[in-house]
Image 1 (cartoon, one colour):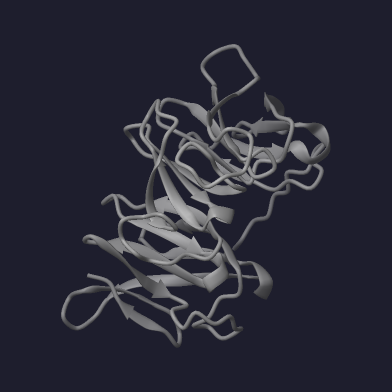
Image 2 (cartoon, helix red, strand yellow):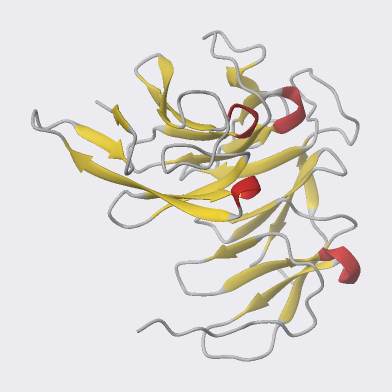
Length: 251
């Protein structure tokens, strides 16, 4: 049985969401209300926890209970320390103007913060993945335009690290999911580069998430669906991601 419970109080065009380990639900409520709200488990009312001037394309809460918001409109990433009595975030990445240099972003979307509080950003309109060491404002480009490893990206919209520190990138304009392997990257799903509606294809995917078994769920935007990519093993014992019609080996 699937139970459906709706959270809708005072929400107008919510865009982003993050669920913490404590089952707190963080929702972007910026479109008309100019804030990010929190619902606590078993409570029916929300409370504003951060006020912003623009929409958050992505939200993230790190292990130190800091809340992050990526703002495509302001070309920045904002941070708020939730343990302090404050609701106004500070800018930690980007200058507020779009640009391709190391301290600038251009319409950032997906963000991820690792256990060392390093920030990874899908710098969408710069066609690259940026890595900001904790406390630094100048980034290293890990993939895409300007990276030392040549691997072309087209409007990446999400970035996720798995438990082994591998990068998974939603390469939206190329309609595929890629991941880091050794000193390069490889495609694991949607690898034709063409959009489509079959089980092996994506059409402008936007975000992804893992379940506890390592399977990937992808928001397949222009196909109006969620795709599940299953992690399994082949006969040689190697991990592979598999759909109904698509198989790619992952070492």
